[in-house]
Image (cartoon, rainbow, N blue to C red; front, side):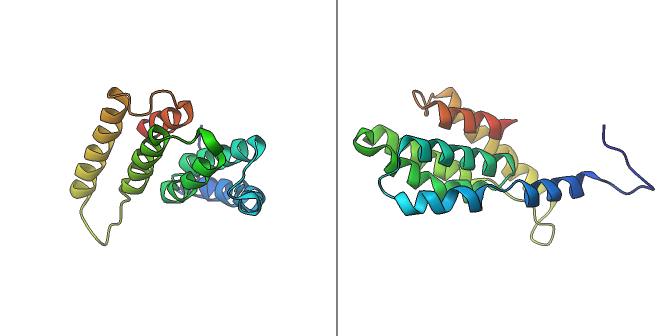
Length: 144
């Protein structure tokens, strides 16, 4: 339960504190960049954890920028199907609307948000990420 003191919301400050204190980017990304394009399985797992973290924090553009490193970490198993799935996910992550009160109304944002969520749901319904549990998980998280 979040408490409000003197009509002062705590949630925005809690989210900011979590973002500042639990950002794994500086720990994981240098190791990924050092080994790129030949990532070992441990680095690929760390990279997925970093992508998940960005998605959980709502930093979908940053998560989208990391997906090409996953492809290179797959080595010879990188196929055209995986390339297509990664491209679809990158597109979804990049298209996620962000509300900016100075650029539009709440109604416009809600329309964009609904269309984006519908597209995410459509991709899941069409099994666009079938066989790639990490991408399916990310899509499901974005729908929550």
